[in-house]
Image 1 (cartoon, rainbow, N blue to C red):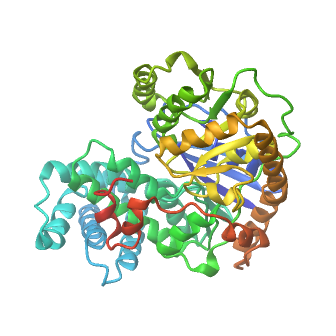
Image 2 (cartoon, helix red, strand yellow; image 1 turned 45 degrees about the horizontal axis):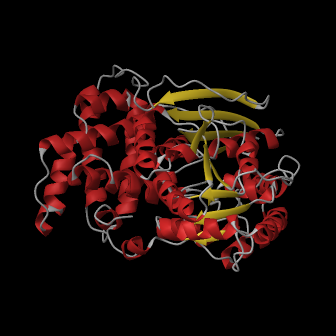
Length: 519
């Protein structure tokens, strides 16, 4: 079978997390041929993975790079440019308009017509000719000014259009002939998948690790953009995510938390097939020693979604009760997060713990970080089904985690396999760390129980078997019934929307509230 795997900002240009999942999939399914299509930022990124022999091609597409194709000459070029404006007007009317007039269907129809325009003249250059600015202003005036929002400025409309039109321009990129297209994220990755499906009838599979739309809400809430820009961009993204969830042959969430979001965004329950992440037990054998000093370790990229401010603030409280405690932070700092790391370093100085916080940089896999601590910490505000947690459990390490995404689904309801606290609660996080650092017997029992659960539910073999089944089902037009493991996860304690996000989950329109509520 020939499969196109579409990624965004992950494999093959960065390591860890979703990239690990991609490598597992490509390496673990040698009977299938893959084309990897990777969306990157500027185009300066270079592959850091050695791809296996069954990868036929690796294609990097810079979202902010040059357009895919010139404006192709055609006797009716002016007609197609005007048609682009007409479809943009329909698209933004659906994005910013009422829920009552089938906005998802209208969005899908407009996007499909834009794919047709791309095939005729090249959408990127057509967008560059005029773009979404006028369509955004018209839809905003028609739907939002009438309900009390101030008019959107031309500058704000230009900013929103510059973001969204770059995503729409991706429709010019064509994938090779494949049997299945598998998007590893919603958003722009899935926009490419939609185009492939409309052009060739290729079935779409969608796997979300973190919930794309939720993470965009979190990112844009703290972004240095005006309210109208954030409102317009998230309105478009929400409609796009809805179209993908409706259009996909199957949605393959890694946990039940994601599945709840995907059902809310239109995925039919019978088309949702949960496939938890897995790791190889032979790679992650039990750790047999502990460091000399009481140590908390973290492994992951240095990123605001990991909320290392909470971890460092918690560690400062730990030091008051365990004076010789150490915090070792393993992981790369992406260039775009350099300022974030500077903020974290400044925080360690302000809290008086700088000498006990060790920035270890990237490590070869997670095991060195797991071995380095008595306790492995995960303080994120957004996760899918995190590999670092599963790997720590498989190694038999005790963990302290925030209750986000599918984290709670990894653990048992009695927290005998790991500890769970509310996100952004540094005092509770500190209490949990101290309780484990000062109780060796509890640490050992928790680590042993964690490994038993990981062996039962989160092995790589089980994960790959389910993807084999999903690929075959997509190719033959079948659906799959939930496995026993999915039922187990559904009954486990699950990460839920943070308290202040719960109300907005039931609100309409979702993005209108999300950006005004602290997540």
